[in-house]
Image (tube, rainbow, N blue to C red; front, side, top):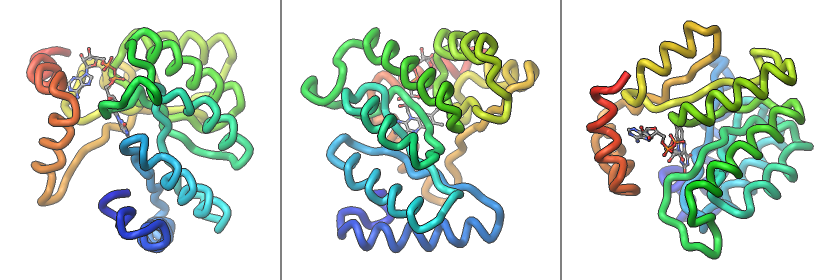
Length: 208
Ligand SMILES: Cc1cc2nc3c(=O)[nH]c(=O)nc-3n(C[C@H](O)[C@H](O)[C@H](O)COP(=O)(O)OP(=O)(O)OC[C@H]3O[C@@H](n4cnc5c(N)ncnc54)[C@H](O)[C@@H]3O)c2cc1C
């Protein structure tokens, strides 16, 4: 949202996103609004709601499992038929807004996935964590959730073997791929958000 003018005001960002979403619809495309730092969550969700209320169906956003507020946000978004991507969360957040412990983030992540799937909402499970993926698959099998109600999402270049394996097993997998002239600053920003990503990236170049 930062790139679409959020810091210039919500109306500016809304107008820019709406143009994009409307144009995407004419090409049968879907637009996902990424979620940034916790300070921007309220504004992003308000813009998302406005888009849905304006009748745009081809738009979704993201909820981050590390935020305490995300379960409430999910429950509030369920009635508007949301299409949400669920992630652990990528930014360094203080303990008054986010679970400091990874185990709590993982627990909350699965809780959000199970809730969204149970409520029949299209759920994008964005993670490279194979334990969460297998747990989600077990839940999906147990509840007989149809294959067109969810998808897995991963980043280009991260766990490509796992991506292929899921496709072979018949699951939908979206591979998020930065492209265009400005891919390098984007990539460096992703690494800078979380220095551990540098190590992950190098390790996963060689991992299936
Ligand atoms: C498609 C997609 C969209 C996303 N959109 C957002 C968003 O809008 N807002 C937001 O806050 N976050 C977003 N994220 C990032 C997300 O919040 C996590 O920070 C990121 O996915 C790492 O967490 P994980 O679930 O893979 O689990 P982790 O427990 O962090 O990682 C599990 C394993 O995956 C591998 N791995 C994880 N990340 C990387 C990496 N970057 N490079 C190499 N290996 C890695 C490692 O082997 C690690 O052990 C997105 C992630 C994906 C896949």
